[in-house]
Image 1 (cartoon, chains in turn brown, orange):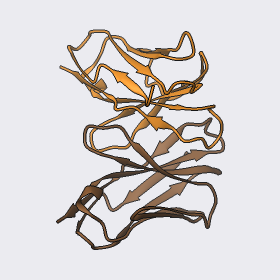
Image 2: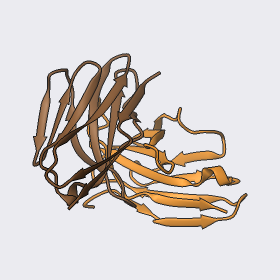
Image 3: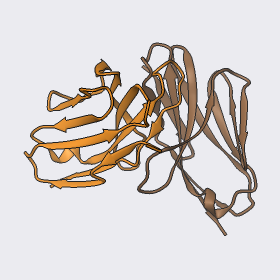
Length: 111
Length: 115
């Protein structure tokens, strides 16, 4: 059974303090790993898709990386508007296009 | 439309009642997905449509839950004899072709509260 575990569950940073969020996963075969951002009361907003180990993608202050067992979301010099819950999800080669999500990391950036 | 839309945005009902939740996918998207998100948790898969047919309904928790997509566009999630444990945010997502590895774009969700 596919499993996705995110850590930490919650993280508080000062503005400008860089850090990383972790997503560990277990799948029979990885078709894709997805990162989403979710603001309170809203649906998940797509950030990145990673398909193979060693792949990296960047967008503004965010950079996602992938290994065979985990993915990291690096946040460089964050701003208060980066505060949100970050969700990681995997699609298994045997999963018929359904996503299996982790429980999310609640990130708070204090000014 | 510009994005996935869901109606109503909030629904309060009483235990035992029947509810319908609607999803309007991005125009031209052929695949549609329903997920359920409980407080503090990630979304959990319910059902996936490719066109009009349910390609995978393995996530539906029991036979009180049913979903349709009669014309391959709008979908309705139907819950019979609602229970307090059905309270959650119901999310809908769509993809252009439903192919492997495609990005799923989510709507804002319907917040269901069963009293």
